[in-house]
Every structure is written in C-alpha cells, then in structure tokens.
Image (cartoon, rainbow, N blue to C red):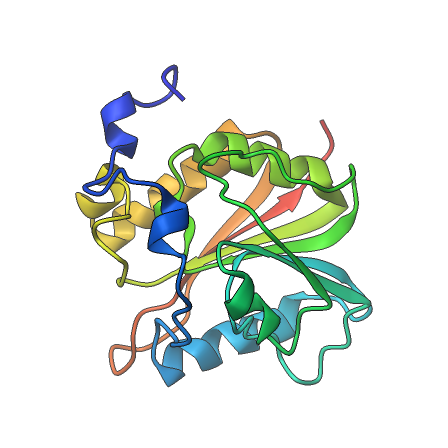
Length: 206
C-alpha cells in the first residue's frame, strides 16, 4: 500500500479490533429504500442468471433481485449471526479482510463479486481488489457500491476527507492498481433518496 498511498490515509479513529466492533449483529439497512431499489435494479441488469456469486463484506441482506436465480451465493463478512439471517446466502465465512485480505476461495471460482456499502472500511484495498480479481472467472464482474453514509470511527481517513465524487475516483483507482479491468462508474439515484454510486469492474486479460 505504501507505494501507492501514504499509510496515514488508511488509519482510522478507532484502531481497535474489527472483531470487537462487529461482535454484535446490526440487522438494519444502511441506505434508504430508493438506494436499495436502485442497487437491486442494477444487479438485475448486469448479473447473469445461474451465476456463482460472492457477497463480500456481507451482512443480513444482499439486495439481490428476486428474479435472479444464482447457482450459489457465498457470503464473507464479520458477523456470523447477521449472515445466518441472510436468506440469499447458501454458505458464509466470518473473516476480517483488514486482518487477512486473502480470500479463502479458488482461482476463477466466481462469476461476480459484490461489495455493497462497505469499501470505505478497507485498510488494504489494493490487496483485497487484487484477490477479487484472482477469484473471478475471465470476464467476471466486481460491483462496488457505496453511498454517503458510514460508521465514521471505522472508515479510513482518506474516505472521510473526500467528497462523493472523489470517492468514485478513489474506488476507480483501487481497480486500476489491482490489475486489468474494464471499469465503468455510475450514479443511480435522484436527490430524493440516498445517493447510490457504483464502480463496476470487469476482469480483462492480463
């Protein structure tokens, strides 16, 4: 990370163990209904049927559309009770990506990896994005979505000191530094709802 960003960029107000912070379940949604609908509609447009999906930094809801019929959905997150209550997950693993950014999956295992409203908490995002690229199949999709909300004590410093537009640039840069991707960025909601920003990378050839 140090060769790309100063280490201070990824410091947090609360540097205590993430396992302590996420030890109790928070069964709430962190964006409003309009933003959730926008994200679900985006997934409906771009995710293939019968896909093998990883919901990374998962919680008790994955916001996948009801008419999507994935082959299997894996969850990786910080709270087992939350993920056990997620009806769209077939199986899950509890892991802190800040402690260990290596994903416990095989090369080219997934058609899509999703990271919803959580990228702001990654302290080593380039390593995580590189791992995502490893576990994606050729032409696999990595969909990173975020809004303007966060737990400020656990969000990294660079995120807290940027605007929403700068967040899009930052996440795009994470993609650029982690391998070859075809990248698109979109804003999906109106001013009446929480903003929903999406940066979408498709794995390309080395």
